[in-house]
Length: 196
Image (cartoon, rainbow, N blue to C red; front, side, top):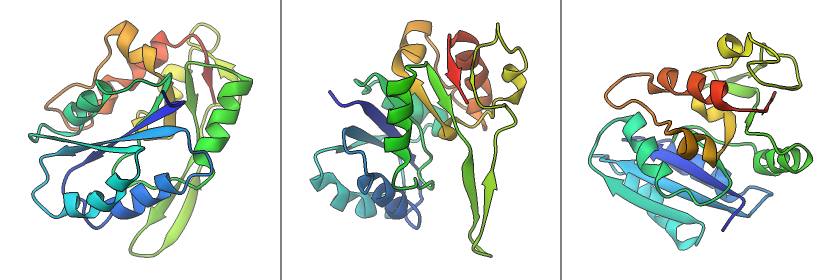
């Protein structure tokens, strides 16, 4: 069993998925599994993914299109690690991302880590660093009530203890755009310790 599972959902993103998977493959931390869920892509996304499957850490699961929430739920069925990360298929990670996160988790074994990120604008090639509105620290909704509204709803700038999903029966709503809005607040409410 690896230290962390990474679920990457894919739907018609052949122009972006290669860079995203390469950023995972080149991580300075190597004890992970990458669960790739192809959500019924009709373009050449699977052809771009195929070369990565020679790496034993990368696993492809194909399913009928059901939307991003459904694809994430599908991937969660295959999680065996203590922690899980959910980047979008068009995201890419800084090469030391997993190493940094896993070092933080060894120092403070929390239920969730929430971190800032870089926003890249493809047409202008600009990069903007996005900071969190929550002060650095370890909290829960009992110790800092405003984290329920100040934690970004996106699932991709966080690492979660897998049990948060399993133990609490939390899944992404199916058939809705922005399905993370129905999920992230529930995870924040259930987490005993969240590190920002």
